[in-house]
Image (cartoon, rainbow over all chains, first blue to last red):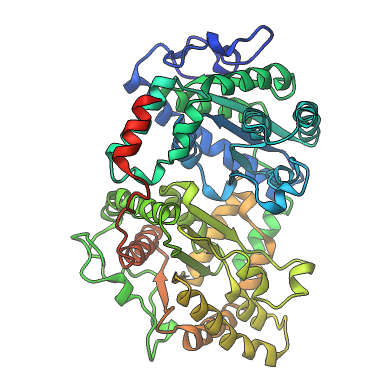
Length: 285
Length: 285
């Protein structure tokens, strides 16, 4: 639920993948629900940082004193250059790093490939009180996995159900899952890759393999469409966030995260000691 | 090396533990080398965030493209309430979380206790390109370990040398180690603990055991003094940072971190691909 006057609706509702969703209907350059421009967006993002930081601290506090084991898991998926890193830096980076557990999943190692695809994922589920962030995730195993044929067809098919069961289990144990796919256009990606080539301080972010993946853009779109149809569940829905405008994507994901934290109703935990008694002990120390 | 006009000297030199150092000579309320007040300190801290963020990104970039495996490890030690958490939040938290590996060491688990005291430490040494932060560290094993007699005297004695060898090994493999002890006064700690008792939103940070440790303040001082005498080495010196003024401690640690990064001479890495060729491929994609 958004508090900003610029929002005409709740991004969690507007961007949510429901029945009949078509990825091709999403305009990557649009700013659904936000009636302002870049400067308004940047101001709105900054304005809500204190709220996000306090909710994160409350979540953390409740895990440290008391027995609240709940946590939040933000799953970010996107084509290269879509801005996952910027969201980690500018949205997640605004809260206390002690309360964040970030995992950037790369191509699986040999050890990881010897296990079920969810093995390495389960090991990185955030602990009580934390905001976990997956920069890429188990969804790679039905995205690049499907497009590049990294596993047999039947295994890929099996995974959608396995993912839903896995996520339902997380939700049941107190993980609030926020799944966001950042949607950029193929043209915008080209321009962002070109910028990486033009700037020596961005060369390190450029990977020639990214151009190879561009030739499979439509296949990735189809794989994402299937992901949305099969894994946008009631307990862990997907959100598709138009991301050609970085400021909008950041703001929208911040709002999704705020909504998830607000839904947890996070009062400060009660003291598990006698405050007056401790005052006396401290005074005498 | 500080760039701020408020510094009259380099904190890395001024705060460094050298021969003849006495912990009791450090005034926790002082601001060595800084000729300004709280507002100047806050401004100086903010002013150098872009520099710190860029150096962190350069360090990270060089590990991703090219073969630079160097990293930085910030080791923070202090009595409770001295402000380690604030430094993580306000100094380290200002850089991209993707480039930071933070570990808060708690009392060792049963599994950890079954191994040598450095076992769990070695597993958390930051990987190439990262800034690692140890919130508490292997030094606990010669601090609370000594004060509370958690290991035989001979074992505690053995550890100083083991630590020096361990750290020399890290330095040899490319880890720049920054060791900072935040020094608060016993009175300041009392007032910070009292504040935690007074504010319901701070109760979760209060631990009755902290008052027990206060009664051992002098023993901890003696244990720290021994740590400084035995483990402030040429390759990994200690710095003692007066911390009754939080703004000063943050600024000083930021400066130590900046100095460490500057010493690495971090040019942006060169492209490991043919830029013109990639431009053509991208244009055709």
